[in-house]
Length: 117
Image (cartoon, rainbow, N blue to C red; front, side, top):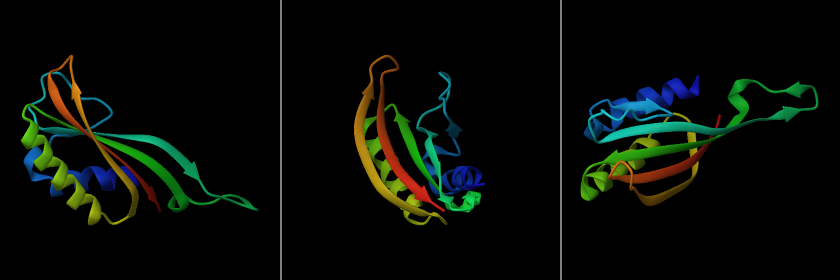
């Protein structure tokens, strides 16, 4: 399953987060920096005979990088970019945005990308 592969890949290849990689939600008491990944959408390929296997699904992902310090956030973003470039599945359409979570007082990098496997 690609989600499990991505989870392990990020835990292993983004050392600044110290293994703090989570699906969908960041708990308030989590030490920062940390990553939260979300599968935004899954679009299975369809053939004339019906749906194809899981290996032929396009997925839209979002990774939110949370940190207390702006430049630490940028360093983690760079590690995420390198990790995505070495991921075993093809990564495309990477878009990165700066943000700030006013409620939590955290710097956020939002990384959107697609995989097709």
